[in-house]
Length: 149
Image (cartoon, rainbow, N blue to C red):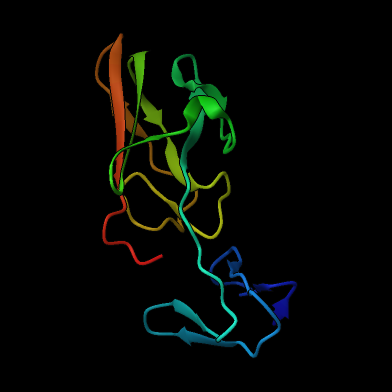
């Protein structure tokens, strides 16, 4: 069902598929039940541009600057260090085994966010990651080169 420029996918995935129209147009939505891939086609579709990426997760202390699942804090805005390569570092992170993180594009979970393994994220909750010793510097790097937006 099409609602306000978003396709409501019901039970799969647990979120909406968003797209932008430049003008009124017929829209065709394709769903591949084998791969669970969704595609949208229309002469009126606009282009989506990646402007920035935020790291978000179960922040505490210096991990994610203490921001707990905040997808819009400028403190966790990643820097594009090479075309398509985004990076951010956190210093003096305490030893632990439940550090969770996702990467959200343009300050929103949709239409694109990735889990720690760099694949489009559909999993909740995120797996925990381990920091081996107190005082560590943790660098997160996400490579979106070649990703078809």
